[in-house]
Image (tube, rainbow, N blue to C red; front, side, top):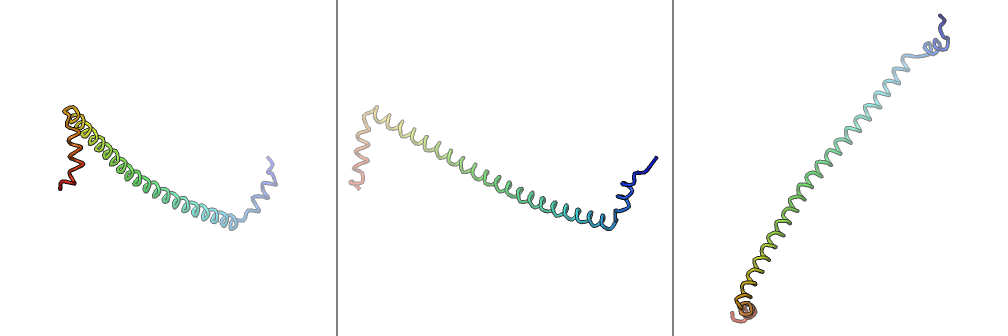
Length: 106
């Protein structure tokens, strides 16, 4: 069995100090990259939390708008029914006249 001299030359030319320095630089680079990624993850997590809070606030605002619309719709229906009753009884014209002239009477 014969040893390949090219492999032996490569092994002989490896300087442990140089390899150690390369490994140290690679480790430092990896650590720096990890720190940057952790900062990015933290920033993104904060953005997600801020957006979640904004969604909660907007949901509450939207619900209030729905509630207000429902109240207005109910008030309209009540007024419509009242006017219908007054019209059926022939009293709508009298109520309108009183509403118009009421400020003049006071």
